Image 1 (cartoon, rainbow, N blue to C red):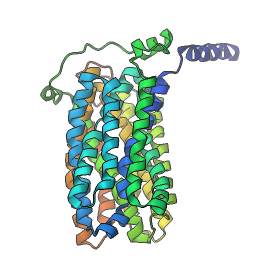
Image 2 (image 1 turned 30 degrees about the vertical axis):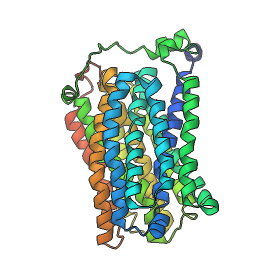
Image 3 (image 1 turned 180 degrees about the horizontal axis):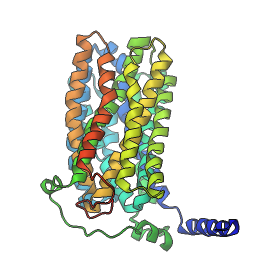
Image 4 (image 1 turned 135 degrees about the vertical axis):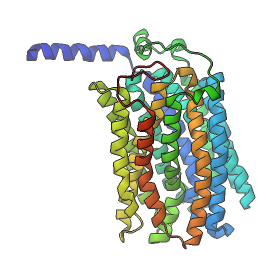
Amino acid sequence: MSNEARTVVSGLASQAIAKIGHYRWTICALLFFSTTINYMDRQVLGLLKPTLMGDLHWSESDFGDIVAAFSLAYAFGYIGIGRVMDKVGVKLGLPGAVASWSLFACVHAFMGSIFGFKVARAGLGLTEGGNFPASIKTISEWFPAKERALATGIFNAGSNVGAVVAPIIVPLIVMYWGWRPAFIVTGGIGFIWVIFWFIFYKKPEDHPKLSAAELAYIQSDPVVAEERVPWIKLLGYRGTWANIVGTCFSAPVWWFYLNWVPGFLSKQYGINLMAAMLPLVVIYCMADVGSIGGGWLSSYLIKRGVKTLRARKITFLICGLCVVPVFMASQVSNAWWAILLIGIAASAHQGYSANVYTIVSDTMPKNTIGSVVGIGGFCAYIVGTFVSMGVGRLLDATNGNYQLLFAIASSLYLIGLLIMHLILPKTGSGRTPAGIEV
């Protein structure tokens, strides 16, 4: 093909893309902000860990048990609300979840006992469990397969933005007003998001701002027959088990970063709440790059002709290898080397996580996606409950030594990939039980 012909083809392709429209990315932006709020609300407790342990005289085991209460409730919220999302839809289901968890985030401010914090944390976990099943379901309804990993990576990047915003605003609130208003201010933001959701969201086929060309583009994948699938039957799908394994081997590590890294920096390097602001911002900004980059990489490989699941697996491998160096985080003498190692691991985690979620929409019928993501989250948070209790007790037993914890975190992603590889098709030429070409 001549250079002139290439120019003409490129120009026509650009015009076609422009004519399609881009309102679907507005929906992705709404999911990004709900995820930002979700993680900001859950991050507040970890940021205040040194303050609360001093003021309320908690041990590491007490803190671990409070985190475990969140994990256990989140497990049931994840699986239960995932099923609700499949039944009632995301238009009402997601704002209902956001309003509920925002209320429980505010309730923390009025607690003073370990039991009270467990109750508030359990309420937060139960209701926050709706965000990811609803968001993954929304992506499956608003994006074609070739864009889902990128869209998932973008909205999932909100988890890092929430973890960046919280370390900036929480220390300032604490400095001027104390730790209780920190829960109220951050919790109240979710109610504002609910208003914007009702203003901008409708189903693609009902949305007046969506062009016919963009609707056709969104619905351009082969139509998969939908049927009511009982939970027990979902366990017969490879996509369900791949999601369970991928989430169980990665999510507890992320929660360890969210809840214990501020305490690690305080214990290991004497970095207090105000001084931790910059290191935590750096870590979660790096994680944002990984979230979008991991989604972009597998989408790029697919557009280059790599079969869908093979592209996901290549991305898993790259991300898993990038996590490995974090085992040295507790052994370096300079705090910024530790921060860099944790930041790289957090970035790789987010790229890995974006593709774990996307596997569900790759392999499962649309009307089961919320349920499958819910099952995976349920299993992961049950594991996370025991992990949180174990982390607290291990730190009490070792006088705050984090070396073994970082060593375990460094290996779990590659182990998870190996098991997922055994579950999913070995080549890109097979079909999943959902009947989708992979």
